[in-house]
Image (tube, rainbow, N blue to C red; front, side, top):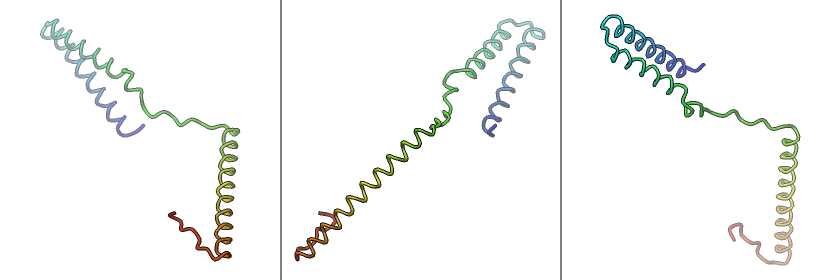
Length: 110
């Protein structure tokens, strides 16, 4: 459990205790049902906020890739690397021919 979630649990516990104590005080000491119902309403509002769907939108676990998918990705990367190497070979060969003919090789930014 992270430090932040521990802190929120402590705050929620204090919130519940204060409202339960306020309800008991209002009902039995002051005999004020309106005040008591206010504490019940606060408890319900706290419960709804604690269980709200927006709270559950935490970090989703990273999806696990199976072996077939990883193998496919590896083959794709290998094929791309091979094609890049072929393009480099073609560029070097073309530059070599231009030098042999006495032409100036193309600059990289052209």
